[in-house]
Image (cartoon, rainbow, N blue to C red):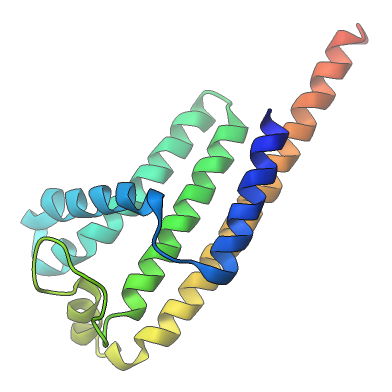
Length: 166
């Protein structure tokens, strides 16, 4: 079952890498993004605007650590792919900072327009977004490879223990 899931996830990661577009899991990411603004708004405007991105990236990482704590490495690597996908979503939003064509939720201020404008790099938003996208692709591919390895290792351990050889 894990191999079938990984075959599907492999196709998904390939699609994310070459033709990322907003899709079903981004609704969940959006919920965590908005919650990040809410929970970090008391720390000043910069952290408030960063809070959305922090929120949407925090939850996949927290889930990955939860699974790692329980030695469920396969599941942890899948959470790493979720993190990478969320980072691709961030890259898309960041790349829109100057054009501001994406619809906004909960306000009329584009987080990354505000942040990059304050930092003096707004004109470089598309370049930064491209680099961030490819960093996310590398993370997704790395997590995918690690997930495949964890499946292979767990099968090898099962074969070894079932053979009675210790």
